[in-house]
Length: 366
Image 1 (cartoon, rainbow, N blue to C red):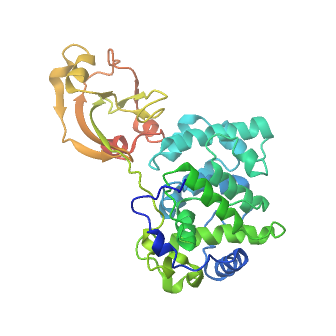
Image 2 (cartoon, rainbow, N blue to C red):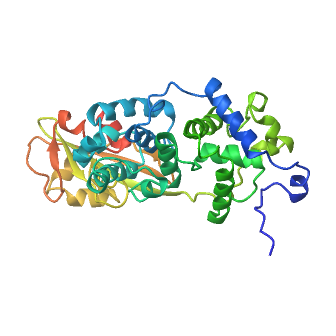
Image 3 (cartoon, rainbow, N blue to C red):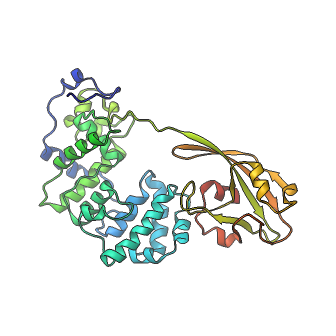
């Protein structure tokens, strides 16, 4: 049965006009040479075979720009210089250092992963991609990056930048929304790698194909004129580089309205509660959250609702959801507990080092 073609893929008659794909050895050699002379080499997690630093950077760089990660990477290393130090840290401290990077499940998995590296492997990362994938939060591409950079294993990565480079190079029109098509691309990616007996080339190739996607083979208006493999690229030969990669499945967005109770006591402390382990802002400290203003008022001690002030609502955008947030302010003369509202009072020096959702940190002024 012929493979179903994705609706926005390149038509077969166009693909047939392309010559056969590049010889793997030619592609790998050019990527290695280009990375040596033009690739990135100044980033703090490069030029190292320390798996802890490589792993930390790979986790932070998922769906986050390099410029944003630089400061966080330095702060994490200053506080947790080794995987053992990270494993021994508290989750609240990890979340506090992560605060602002978003996707907090990465931080939670990172902490668990550090603890498993210590418990299962004596504090040393396993040397193979297969074993690395058994750790929390380490998927196939991250495992391959660590194994290639640190141990010279001949394994292919396939992050977003690399998918773009390789689908264009090969004019691979399989739908990247399909797990089966992604596996096919992974097989093609493995075939393009340098020989297994050259660990230095494996590391430089891995960095080079990432660099190419980040700086030259960008999503829109790729710089084909300065690309070291432009004459090998089938998508360029077809005049259609921006049609790759093909991905038909779109994220379904939803929205929700939430009311946030911002209570301060006479000592200017803020009332915070720790969120449940599942759901929005899981595990973070947060202002109390309610589905309606009525529910918020109902949770307060009797009479407290008369002292509420509504601040302007604002929109906070998550990957799959738009949050319409309604802050409700309560200034209290006393310092007593907040009745049925779970949580505790936190001074500014205390809450600033906690893991807080970005919109809550913004409301608190830090």
